[in-house]
Image 1 (tube, helix red, strand yellow):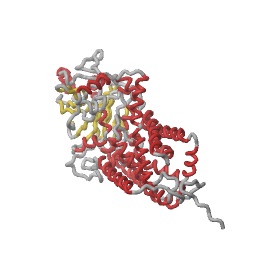
Image 2 (image 1 turned 60 degrees about the vertical axis):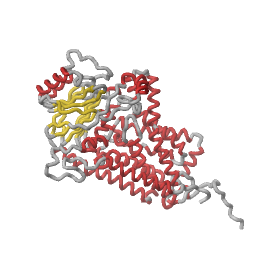
Image 3 (image 1 turned 90 degrees about the horizontal axis):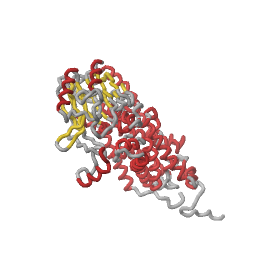
Image 4 (image 1 turned 30 degrees about the vertical axis):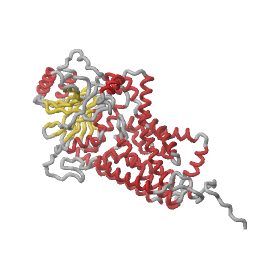
Length: 582
């Protein structure tokens, strides 16, 4: 009998059982398809095109909140085309995905540059392209990091033992959510944004953020995407993979908690007292120089003060002005005196923002004037916009700062950072102030509330007029909703050009005002009436005034630990390299 032919290492064989085997011999669908795709001359352009489309799908919910379900599937086609690619190929596909995402989600950067720098269209697009390319490195790093872990597990090889594939797929299921959380939390972005902020309309999914912060929601979104990818690759045989069931149980636990927490908080909020709040939305155009008073008005009596009087007549107890044009309140004593006298005559509390100059520095400052016409403190903005309110690394180098100011022009009117958190008291209610950009930082907001042991409301003021008629102001709504649910407090976000919002602790938007429309609005905002000294049981995991005892940082710390363990295991394990037929 003739001896059987010997296959040499690396020789081609039509179909290897191990190459298409998953956990415990589970067949994978992708092996033959991917082999065919690698030999197709248009394989790379096709993969890049799929990556761009997937990035666009991820971006759309940020622009239109009703499309929130797209976030739960957008990673799937991109992850699929990245499989069995080299790290450099993954880097390229990650850039394609990132460009599709950030060009779509932050197209308003062009308008931003044209408004504050007065750039022409082409120049604004070129500078925007640099911003988009930089931002696209977030998913590029995600793709490379995931690919490295897969290589250490041997998943990128074409012929593997069943156990090797099983280990690799289990690793992938855990590592991808961890990488998503860490990169979205720490990649330095000019305008930071989390995956969870695209879910402001998905109330069932939002509830778990009071335990794990928006980072937990990011992890669940990533986990669902990976489970869907595995379902496509493994088909019905995936039912035999224990890791799939474990991942599914985590997802079901998240939504199960949401199904219990949502009606609980809706019932609680229905019993809370209400505060009648008036929101002034002047819709003033952006300006880097103090504009003259409107015809028929003066610095001492601007249109916003007249609108405040109308809101008082409608029953408002607290009136809030947004971040907007220069008012002269902190610079001109006559203006401050006139404001306080008018507030005292109206018998309300007024919160307003203006630029405060002290020595040779200036601050973006928010203050509260009470019904007696007395100022109750000043909060100076602590989180500043890079390249808008300060220049990272160069602000303390005079000659370098001068060159940067020459480039950025008048818009770079440097704002000093405040040094301490301040709260405003209104009877038993604490108003926790935030200014614009600060709403994007979950840990910062949680820290601002940590020292408050009385019923509290978050109050943010913003001016998004620099973004023109784009969808950017609607993206800002998402961060307000997340901060309200994370901390289980009501939140007011008053925006110069709208939409201003009032959000309850369960994530429901009580009020969303018209965009780019001047006006005044009254909303009856619910707030927790208990104090830290009140008797009565709090719900599990919440303090005496109903706020979560958890902190978003806790979940990040757990993520660091799990990611470190995965990294250690990957480093000590020898990569699975195929050296012959299996």
